[in-house]
Length: 168
Image (cartoon, rainbow, N blue to C red; front, side, top):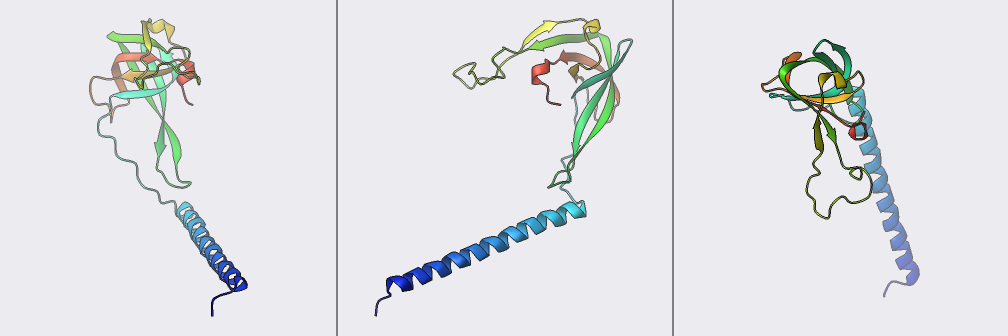
């Protein structure tokens, strides 16, 4: 005896029901895991930085030839355990410190293509003086040695970043 169309419909309904129940169980377990991880405060540690030669941040103070720069860092990772903390660095502009302003092509950050290739877009660099830097500017400061445990260093180069590329 072959199954009738009503028998086939019943089998399909049962299979769909089983699939819906399984998806519900999987979703419940996924949400439950997220909640448990968030409540535990446990997150996977970020890799430890061992060699730091560049900081990027906002100038919060200028005193003589010293810039105070606030750098934001992401601490931890996970569902809801990530947080951002700020550190301050004192960046000294020495006699040999190169200070430049970066300018990108105007179409770089629009939907219009800049070039047909996937070549990196190179910014234009213009030399500026220390007095062109002001509070609120976003800069990159380069060191010629490891500054991972330093809070003050003499920069070999300071780049003033354009406002249209800064993510705050």
